[in-house]
Image (tube, rainbow, N blue to C red):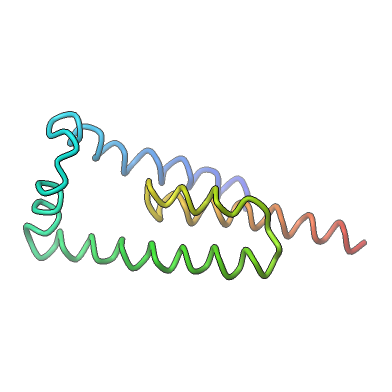
Length: 108
């Protein structure tokens, strides 16, 4: 599963940035324009609301599950939420799989 999570990290970084970087190069960091375009239609607002709620759920999972498993460096997947939940979630799940493998070795 770790390999799958790493592939999802790559896709979760590349696909959103492939859309955002050209917009950023054309418009600069124009936050009012970004917000206007993000809410310019019902479908755009739907997509952004979905991303926002997914991001909050991802942050909650990272904090709760990360502490439960006593994972180190939780700031890394939390910081990756800047790219989006499409990176933060698979990155956290990758780190979680590594931690579970460590715990299994420690239990032996």
